[in-house]
Length: 325
Length: 282
Image (cartoon, rainbow over all chains, first blue to last red; front, side, top):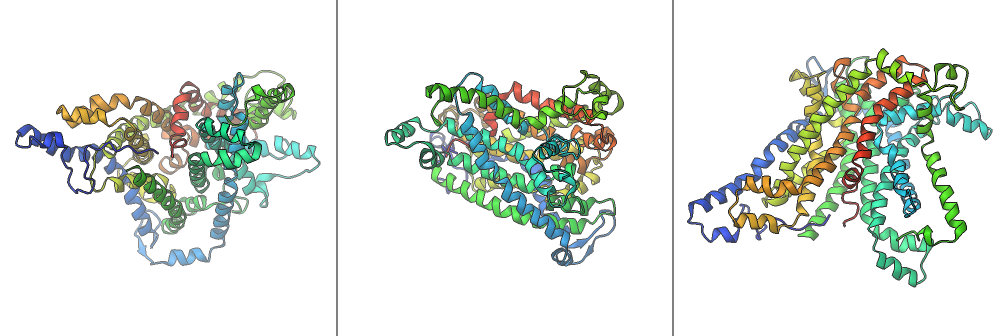
């Protein structure tokens, strides 16, 4: 992200919004005073609606969730303060560990989307006729809702007639109902999730490849680099911005996995494919009674995991900003 | 260009590439093609086990059945009612916040910006209980308005990141020149910056349209009944009713997927520009 400094001010550390030299020269003038004070309040005028909405619906709720996780609450009645009892229950809850383990599995396997996306992007980075249509069609899965992706893959995996089951039978393996088998269900869902995620990474890399400097490639070619060596030493370093974004969106996608679990298995069989986000939802809004406090404590754990990645992302952005200034 | 263009490769390589291209696409979209064919199959095909062969007849009537026997039309309408105001709201708010964060220097600027960015990445579950509670208290639970308000607020995070970086990349001389001329801040925004933001507004609009149309989590958390349910939530309830009626499930899925797909093909350039922002620059 290239950063030109647009601000009219040169003294960046001044707590007040300094006035541009051109106008401050005539500071006795009433209209320039007006302009100065206007420049002081203008940013807040622009910011207020967005900031208020974001505070009310995002920032304050995070705090409230932290607070609710210390209570026993059914969502309607009185809240009872129980300290860290929810968290103590959590560390003795086998279902929590299953969900946590599945989240780690999601994170690990989802990362395959990054190299897979790069491979497809390289495959498609040509200029033959009709290639643009191919690129759009390869990108297609990302545009479709995860709910529809989940339905498509449920059908793909369906026992007896599903295409995947047929393919397995064709190679001599039969009788596996992926989504009803504790051993395979999470992998089956992750594959469904990888489909759109690979498409996303592919489009990031296609854009990245478009901007790789042709001079460097030519120079490397003259030096005799080609194939894998060229890819590894010349291309991939230049694709760093694309890789960074691909990794960030893939991590977020993996930890946000909810829709697919919900539509493909409802966390089953016997809770074996739950992830934290789904388990939280189940606890907080289950048909057997709402456990808001316990649900909130699961959400806090998920949030804590995410914070690690958010911090890494922000630190990197901060570095970019500093370099830009 | 990497890899070496096939145009300059040997004839057999070129031929191989020409064959590999459609073949790989076929494999890649296999599940999707299967669903599309199933959606026009007559029910009798499925009963007879003809899942993958050529459909015995072309049955667009499945689509009519979906609209006639289910509230699909209402679900689609609800999705539009949620999506369009959200796009307008989030883009409008972020034009303002993005402009403020890109052009003014003040102490909390970078902090505010990072809060928007970080908030955009938090897991939905940490917001779920308080947002549901708040929506209930405002009497907006189970309404389109409740859903829109949340979406606008949440999407403002991503949109602000997008707009702020876009405006920062504009030539600063324009704004400075207008300031020297004594043009008021509001008019600078309205007449100098806003016209230049058109490509960013277009890109964000298609992106947010797709994100919100495809949202499922908040639809289930903030809406209960059919009357306000968007299509993603609706199709799940239909999936329960249509056990093993895969021709209907398929037709329903195709309908639900259609609007963002059309949007994507119409606005492809903007869509990809929006999605890949930041993928090229260091």
